[in-house]
Amino acid sequence: MRQLLLAAIMLVVATPAFAQLTKLGPNDSLNVTWPAYVAQDPDGLDTPDGYRVKAVKPTQTGVIVQTWTTGIVTSLALTSAQLPSGTFSITVHPFNVAGEAAASNVTGPFGKAAIPRVQTGVAATKVGGQ
Amino acid sequence: MSSHGGKLVWHRARFCLDAPVRLLRVACLSSLILVQALGTPLGAQSAPTVRLFWDANTEVDLAGYVLVWGVVSGVYLGSSTLGPTEVSYEAPCPSGTTYVYAIRAFNTAGLHSAYSNEVRVTCGGLPVRVVPRALGNVVVVVVRRG
Image 1: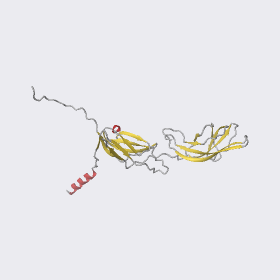
Image 2: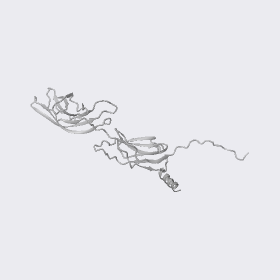
Image 3: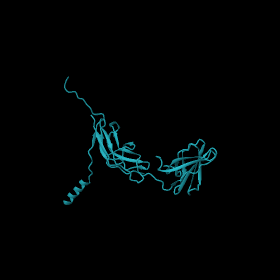
Image 4: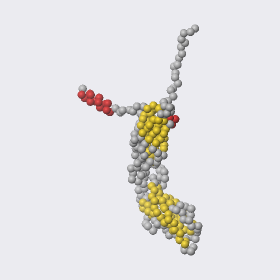
């Protein structure tokens, strides 16, 4: 019984806590900000040429929905029209000619409402009358 | 620059264009030479080079420049004759060697100036850009309107 309880506690601890989906309306926008890159290479050879902000599938690791490329800035404002429909998370990747950094911390998930599909199965039944 | 693993290094140089046949006038220009060490371009197999820059001489009878290079100071193994409008040149810089470069001007009378001071470049171990590390603290704020 004690072992069963311990196993149950371990299962709860090991289960990742998924962040709640933030729904976005047609007038909502996202403001993505990140800290300025501080070079670690003594000659600054790791200095980025820019940043790639990516919308990625929150449940499918590495699946990119959309990418925006910026110069040396520390923020990117994305209007609703620029955002993809469906659910996505945001990551930021500094890059230079040598390559692209691994993903930053993942923010989200966000969900942009899509237009509902056409309703089917509509029926009308005459009620009463002649 | 963006397609090369390059690094910029500044060297101060002094060019003198001697014109002894014209009233022994000696024109000296203080110049900067920019040495840009270039790695092998991505996807190419060309040899490493350095790009050297200099401030142009202003003599009206300037006919061009001779850029020279070698492995020992004052002993030059190669040269390139350049036109009077040139202000830079991409010279060979084989990996694993230290090359010295110098330049001198010549005029329409065929007279050459003294060599500039030498610029020394270590061609081996050219700097290569490093992939940036991953960021943290990315924040996304939802801005709601209406």
